[in-house]
Length: 80
Image: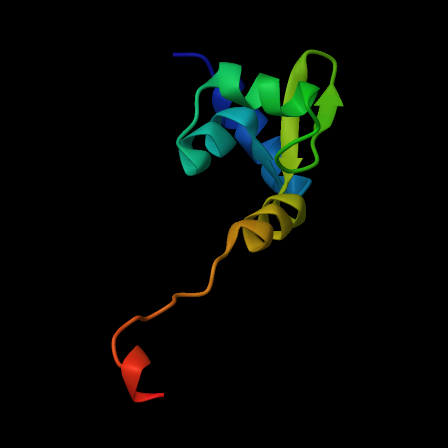
């Protein structure tokens, strides 16, 4: 078994980043979707290092904040 994934994860952690694979897992998307988002300037900001992509945790958190929606309750609407 190669130590490269473990080493990459350690490097990403030291930079306060997520690896691309971790982001795909978190967002429940495919690598192709993430690539399309990067080309269209959608999704969180990213860092390209050679042929690798990483996402700063803060950029992911900021992006998730833009997707957060307040829960709207229709129960009791007539009482207002």
